[in-house]
Image (cartoon, rainbow, N blue to C red; front, top):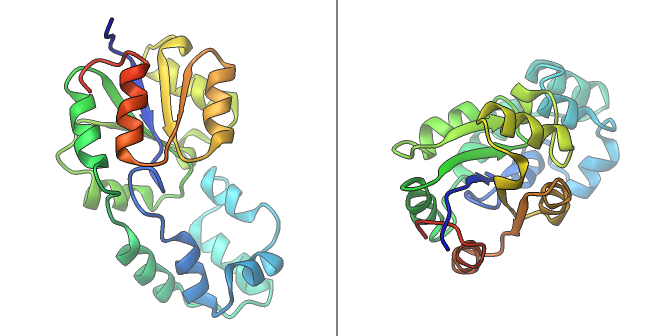
Length: 196
């Protein structure tokens, strides 16, 4: 039997390609592994939770000794977003019957991404920078469920990270690990989701 659920799609590397690593590398001239060795622990997650501003993030990197090019970071970031094959059609199909939202760990740049890449789709957006909490915290999913008036058992998360799909499953929801659009559509059908 087909049923309508709340479908939460992760954004980066699930719906869109994620230019995050390349943008950081381009901005400082280091490999991402080299960059991570210098970047202060936890500072990016603080940006994603909205605890610090973007300017604070850049300042922390410069204070760590990085030669940082903000314009280059944003140029590579903006040029790097692209829909993963088949996913825009899948999201569109899902919205015909189900409530569909984006659930993303992302900084304020998500507003620009939504404007430029999600136009024409009937989806809500829940971002860690607004919620003050990141996936896989149970609180992230509780806030999304509360805001949409959805029981947690009717929340279905599609995400490329198993730690996040495991977290929603532990709360009684359904986790679908993203690999590609074809497998995701099949997994949604197997879960009995209407409209796919």
